[in-house]
Length: 220
Image (cartoon, rainbow, N blue to C red; front, side, top):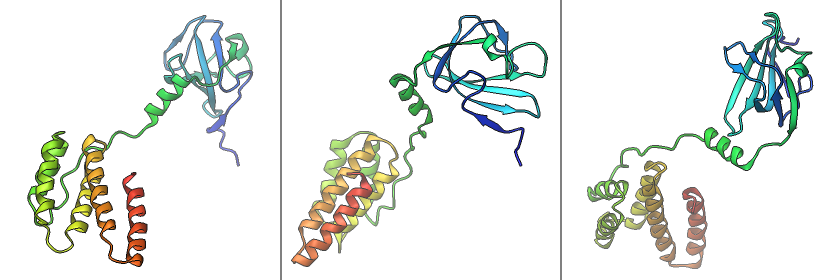
């Protein structure tokens, strides 16, 4: 059974999606917004609530800004399904401009991820300082401190794997920042060195497969 209060359309009356229209007669919609003669907009789609006798036009202005025109067509005179040609005339099919599409993608994109606390420093407090320096954009100092930890093999057994894993976790924790990119590169450097240290052909092949998986996870 149809829900007469929730009907979506691409076309209503003469309005076609991705087409510009021009206002022919001044009118005010249900939200109190005035639409003046000569105004041009890009029509996208419509929603019809037959129960409430409300038509909603989903439109965009010339800058790609989205809005909705709500029309209570049971309230008396004014635009309504069946007489929209008296109020809106075709101003040409345009689709969506590259600028408007870029603006739409930007508006629809999720907000950037904020950095989180540093991952557990696995017994090496200098790693927390590496993370803090990277977040502040002090990459030269962060790299020097990271080299100290690495040269000293400060993480003991399986130092390479531990340090590479910590750097990968730190890159994820750093959110959408330059620090995340830098930490990810350091992680890949460690993993690539780890893969090069294989002692047999079989081990080398296994590490190469693992390296490819890690590269995908890090986006490298």
